[in-house]
Length: 467
Image (cartoon, rainbow, N blue to C red; front, side):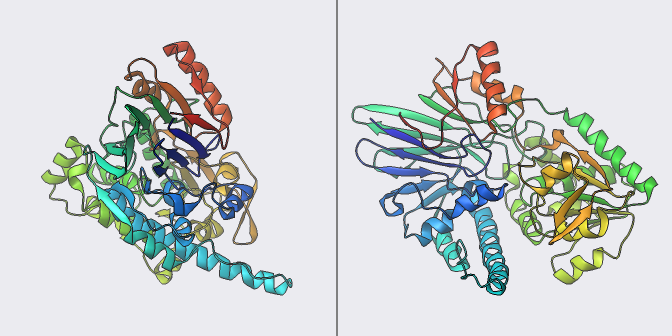
């Protein structure tokens, strides 16, 4: 029998990784993501792979986010030289994401080794290097949506639009098992149906086994219109209070959504701030990649873009100032009021948002807006949960700012959207919940049973099943 092993994003949100092995000996790795959040989770990235990298025939990834692709250079460093299949847009975004991740690995290791030397400890190596990331990029095999391709002998993959970020895909995998064909469908990260620019996630109806994400399996998001109005009110209040607005945002996906909404406010005369800073070199480059693929946007936004003769995302928001260099970034901190600052990282684990927190988080007139999921163990999660102080840049900073969470801006499907997507499948295939915290999976598991009479499984880390 063909086998499926659950190796990552099992009872946790990050670190996506699944191994498919056919009876005829083909081995395909589905996702190779980095664990993010708690220190012990991140330390797990240094552990050995649960398989021999040299035995793999192919790797397939659903989209470019680091929790789905971030260990690919480590896989390559371990000797993997086979193809990495992904959509065209994902392949472009991977260059941006993986080179940045490698740079972070090298710099963080350099910093760590300075401390280790002072303590008389042996130095450590980076998880992987820029050279490893560059080699990974040579192994990309870009694919179009909805066109089947053979990725290994007897294993065929089709990518369908998941509506999460540019290039994101639902992965449909057909595995030949002697005279049978077994169909595995992995949802990837399903998009929120009201996300701007993105199309709705494709619905499928045939599968033998489904892996479905459950990041927000416990609840629905607030409606998009209410969330947009809430953001507008926050901006108005911040203007009255006289402080800055800080928005930690993921460079790919969330940042482009925010620029779209802020651009709408500007066009409608509802943006009181006179300056919006995009302080993320990665997000600035991601904007350029988004501009390469306007044909992947939803029809309504394509029409709006065409009608306004917009060539770049930045053109939609004329007061947007991009600050790619460290000097430009530091100059922002001289501004004490009237600015909206969008900066990475999305969960506040590092990046330029840390410096803006240092200068603003302790100010009661500052407003901090969280538009996305904050994993356990991250500074962002601590702030959302009401921490009075947070550690940033090796120091404690008081949290006096007004904190807002905007669940309606999530790029992930909410509970009802997950139920709707899975309800289109015929005959209740075997369903496994992945990419979620255990308690949220359990809530979704109960709702699936009550509303759809569907028994969903919650796999254990390392569990293996027959397809």
